[in-house]
Image (cartoon, rainbow, N blue to C red; front, side, top):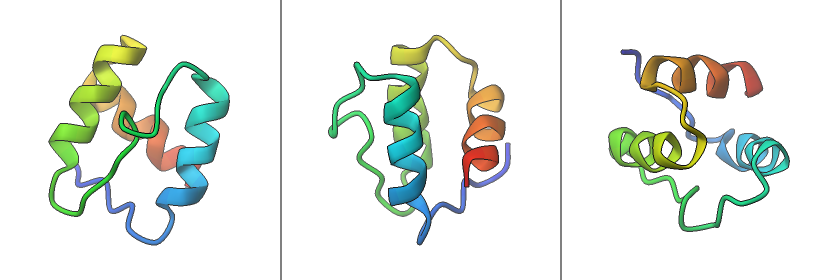
Length: 62
């Protein structure tokens, strides 16, 4: 799996993710550098998407 490399664009991506999944909280979308797996795990639980699918989707939003 690729690294997300979201630093710098995360606020923009986070807004788009919230539009797609309004039930996600700020805690669900908390991103800390080096903790990609934790973020992806929270998103997997809430969205039902697989890890690779989420990475591809998040990169497409940025």
